[in-house]
Image: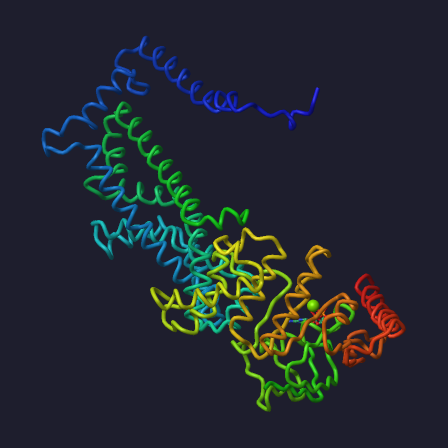
Length: 272
Length: 265
Ligand SMILES: Nc1ncnc2c1ncn2[C@@H]1O[C@H](COP(=O)(O)OP(=O)(O)O)[C@@H](O)[C@H]1O
Ligand SMILES: [Mg+2]
């Protein structure tokens, strides 16, 4: 008998194995749901699939009788806009500050302690301040995401900029590069794929901050909806919403990975 | 025409003397090879030539002027590793030096100006045998090809001085003959001064017009850092015989053993 660490599944069985935990979860749900519903037909905790299907119909297909909008789409659009702005602003900040603190010694001396301190502020603790300063509108939600993930991006990219071998930086100078040209042609292009990697890592936090902000003050959005219907214990709506959010998060991660691979072929070849 | 004049040069770090009393006059178009035990300050010397490090004492003149305080396009360099840009293709790596000079703001050429520059680049790529690989990313090249590329990248700028720090040390020994032919050809064609550090004394003899040996004259186990290395041999090449080669090998090995023993202790 070989050691278990040396036993590898074939491609087919790997797919089956990957599906197995999902299937088990589904079966557990179905069992639990039918047991609870048999005991109490009014039970709300684990609704039957038919009930969930009706909720999906109501939220994702039929327009809302009051506003005429399809709620799921309206919520998704609102949330993605906030998330998109938050990620875009954080990425721009991360690149700009990361590069500057990574390669300019004076900027590093002046900024790195400050950035380290800012990154230690628990973003949710200052959410009330954001609401007071920026109001209850879109701005405060976007700012929360930015405060939540930009410090991480800045520090990660500064590290990555510092990891560019000193030989390359010297070489570029012997080819006549000014500091600006060096940034533009040597540092920035090598940091872009690393930025996408860092963004992927911060997607989870970005969603966390988005949903927290929406839960507290919003008129739409995926997080708003979940917390609104929580009052009615409407698990038949909450569950599909959570699934949907998970699916979007997965798609974003997948997309970022594909873009990194397609746009920066040299990066994958680097083996890092 | 490039001349170098180094007089009574010292380099110290905190409590360590790395180089002491180095004197050197270099005429135009010399190919200088530098050998010596590791830790004897050869790289430090090169970094001073680059402008990356300043001498602690002494004068360092290039064409009669003090050496600039930072690297510049008149002094090219090829390191042992990491001296190409992995995110650029072979062509773009060589093109970069031309673009930086001709497009100050974006560092990038477009249209007819780019095509004109690419013609120069392709000529250089033919000269170093990388034309076939022109569209590959530098990250995809073998170590030997990366070193060729790095040389081409520097030489297209027509530097007065080309600095090479053990450029072939990480390569398959079978490749070095090709590399030697390449570098000698470029040296003759582009009329520059070359300083090349090598760990291989034989290589040093084969390649250069002049060989410098960096070595510690005084080895004091009580105060190993009190004395630095200096140029102990300055040999015009073409006159070397086996006895001299053996003598140099013995000398540098002695220092190497001394340094290693200290490192262990
Ligand atoms: N920036 C530095 N700070 C302190 N010591 C250094 C520095 N750079 C080099 N040294 C020391 O100077 C000595 C010579 O190093 P180096 O020039 O790299 O030797 P070589 O290239 O001949 O092997 C070594 O002992 C090294 O530890
Ligand atoms: Mg060295």
